[in-house]
Image 1: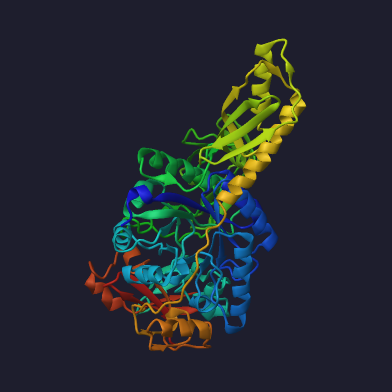
Image 2: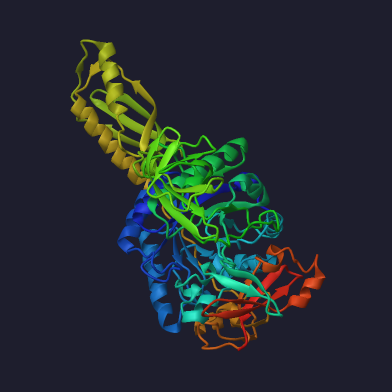
Length: 614
């Protein structure tokens, strides 16, 4: 395992577009992942090369890295275009590309670092070792891994490990879900997932007894590992990833700022660790994770299997729990809590039928809350706030700035020659010499010195903040403000260029190898849908492989999903504890359109979903 003193801790934030990318950087992200003009696993979140280039320029000022997602499976006719895109991204200075399709490794890649997407199903020591040996620079681990499993992987490898800490959860192992593709040819592995896991289903046993009726049985709460940052760092995670490439700017800003504070607190306690980028954030609001979109939170499997990871009553955002209804009047209600409500807030509640219903708050008068309608509300009912108008305004209108501390030195070299220099926290220094200044002897030396200091410290809306201003002059000079301002602006421009050059993307040539893959035979779950991917696995010792789900019209008896979420466990009928429950099998998951057979791999604590036989 790497020594702690060699580890940087990276906060990795999502960007739907350049606006979200800028929000991520301004609120403390060390790296941002964003989709390019094609081949990203969120098809609706693509961005132009020009926008990505602009984001890279801004990011590198702070030492922030930009990773571009090329993480879909590719058909043969798409490989060349994807390769050309990677060459374009290398040319504009992207720091890495995140890929899923191994066929890309059989093309001639530019010298750009490559990261293994979570879509490559990275949940074993052997798989991560293989990816490291092949030449991946970072590996995104499966969300289902516990800290003990992560620690075991880290002890056996040296590649940086990336792990999701917040956001929506796929119920299936990433890259292994074929449910959407089987229903309507919308492949999750090609960025087109229709999210059938968020739909309503019923569940019946072998005898036809209905165990659940019209519930969102495959829908999970959202991930929130705020309380587990320290143990994840200790386990070996280097990159902490926030999910959300379809989320808006306010979500990215709030959640990034939230985890920036948490990570900084821990990094400050560990002298051998450091954050992966520069500067500090002066936030104009207090981040609160529960006030952004969420379906309720879960730790998922970070500590092993736990109750309550599921959200079967609704796949929609609940928001923050605000309390129960204490009393209902003619047009208003009061709460049993002291939480302050605002005009324009959105609230929601579950009806008797467990249907989520939303209301808007029209007016708040003292303890009395007046919604746009009172129908459906009952005393004792639990309410949630899924839209906090005041908080959202604070986030959307925030003036948070990211700054880099600099020491400024203005000194006299010789007659009529002066230098102005800037040294930042990364020990990057820029200096300019000025021979065009026209100083006069100061009538009031103290005032003249103060004026020089004031003018040089005016860094305004730049990326820099003056930590110290040192003035070393041989005489008591007076300078015109416009001359000092021009000199300061010239130095700022030069220092920005120096920082971007210092933090430009590191080149990393990829070399093809013949490292043996952990398996010699592969089925459709290896997601091979082009000839180059087939050649890749053959190069690495796979003697027999079949085409992936997207390439074959029908695979008889195919697993559409394998998941750690177990409906028997949810129903308190875990087969390890209740072997008699096996008499109910097989279970059938169904709705008006589709029907699936459920089986259970108890050795690995996994539930398997297959198309039900007709």
